[in-house]
Image (tube, rainbow, N blue to C red; front, side, top):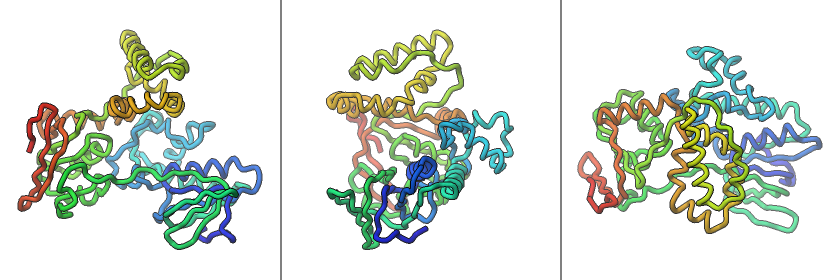
Length: 365
């Protein structure tokens, strides 16, 4: 599967072998009605294990109920059926699995199994190349992808599925910190190795923060955990409730300000009928790409400048049990959320001093 077709020509090249790249390959294989040459380029040894699904920590849960995680729209129970057959969750009753937020570690295995099945029954041919794409050239007859191995691939079309990448810490002095003082959120072994009484500072308050905190708890961490974020917003929880019954399609014709006003109105009306605001967000979820693409460029810029963080915490939610754990820690004082802009960081003996400024100009240390 790792050898290139000669003369390295493909109909479709997929760059990235995480969940998105594997799903793209899976559906191309299933839908192929003629011979289709597909290449999947991924440097990691295992497919479907990008940032989200490479975790081996059972406490890292899906942020969507298992019943909504099928790889196939025409078979919505497929992931739940897999969990049942593989007996992945013996602690969860079969009837409860569709609504459960199961460990993320099961999802990559599920995708790899489905990919192998699709390969076996497809008219298309999938090749796997263990490499990284360094550069891309566009030619009249297609695309040329230059690999770090020195090879090049020619493809008529390309799918970019490169996922998330680590970003540098947004504070002066961060690059000079000793590795013992700086742990990446996705390095779960390093987080588990932290001293139980250590005072920990987490930069950012999104989903990776939630993963880090629950991992600290799983290993019996007792020290204070400080979370520093410019907006001071944490992911909000999912909530069970009836579906919202409005049609979101008219939002596509509205400018940004009007969309936000209408969404807030729907949330208020839903609350009056005992329907959680989360159901309103679920109603617009299938239109995510269309909503973005139908905005004017000035409105897209306004969204990124003023609204994206608020959208993120409402749209990208966590399981109720994860939220409960975070709130319990906040109530006890162990988890402390600081709304501030990071400034500097430097080592002081065995510790790190992190300086940040609040919106009022007050210095936090």
